[in-house]
Image 1: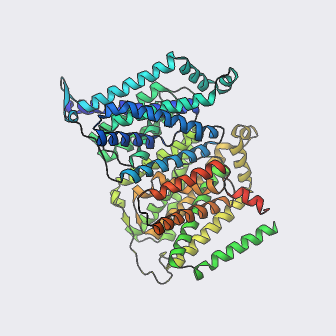
Image 2: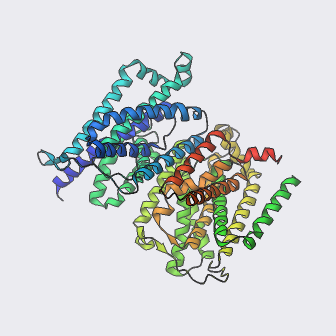
Image 3: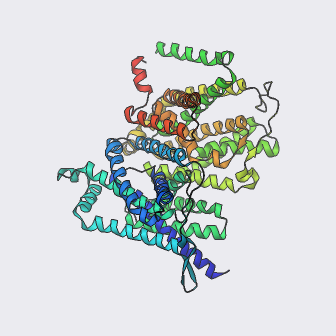
Length: 289
Length: 320
């Protein structure tokens, strides 16, 4: 066995895993606060990827530059989605929320199909073919930058929740919805804000991901499932858990691709998910509700 | 009560007489409606009655279809024998999933995600199973379409229609009996408040397992039908999560936990989807995806404004 190859595969999986982690972080934050599982999460991710593709095609914007306007637009879209559609569903049963978001997901995927067609699209920048050398490791530049952006966005979100008053108010809502209402917090607005922030995470993750894979509409449902796997493994509602889960899934997918066959890689992830659900349903870093 | 029976009788008579009037296309649409009515009824046992949200029912459609299909393909064992093996296989799957989930106290969203995980896991498994053709699919031999060959389940479209009609009627009757049985009352107690049900001395584990097993067994039959109706099976298609969603749309749109909801929901959704296709064809619009966008929008409207489904308000209007 060639250990340099394994180390390189693990490193690449780790970097991709951080981007996965940021995507899942959005899902986890939304669930942790709003208590709604966003079944349109992967679809939102693909919308962000297409946005980056479109901005690149139109004005040659580098996806790392496109990240900022796309994240801002996603924040507002997420805010409106929660305020307009999801807030009235907060007190409805889970299956009702599920149907709502499935409808949103169906609309998103097919709107993409209508506007961009079924063919896979990508972005080509010159640093995609370059790499950093660190001892025996060769790290793709694009992958390293993508992971860096994901880490930066995650750190910003952590800081927001820890140090700002609004962030603390949102955490209060998550801890005790009724208590938050009693002390006069505008819970519905905070929910909308949270959904906006979760969507912005997805936007950043999507813009970074477009440098690593080609995007086509069916990727939406795939990423939704992937995000579920990651947050459940890490702990639904736990922010650190989402990043950890992302890295674990990224590395295990990469290793499965190397040792078994690339097409079986998600079987690995689902197997891991089943194991975690059975042995530690609250996830690796989650707390029991 | 009598009004109900009369209306039900009229509906049954209309459905039995339908092949005499309908063309081949209308008959295939009607068969599809009955198929979804049946599968929705099966899913409803688990969710509508016992309150266990499964988002992975494609697992049972797929395992049922592949079991009966493979027995026919490899050993020439006909669908009537294969049916029982398919049911046994699906019940075994369901009991394993149910046992693992309920033993470890997994419920709600987590249970739903577990069912998705098992369905996806199995899909990828079949993708790598050479015995059933892997991702390239499995094709059953198609022969003699003119005469009814019930033993091998080969025949004209009307045969499939009547089979599906019998299955849908049987499922309706079974569910009507179940919901008024001891199990049905226990399920509803569990659905409304599991802890309270447990406090009353109901063995919730056992009754939830029963719901899962019955639902899986019923879904397995729809899988066998699927295999011999379409004659080609691809893991990517049959196990896909969109197949699970298709199954559960009917009961939710029609009215969760009601007997008539799954039937009405299946009819409304199938006709709607077909209607949109026809309309777009008539308008000369061929953009891929536009039909599903319409469909999604309609779904959104129904979910938002009719939270209990279409059937309950209609039932009230008809004083049923």
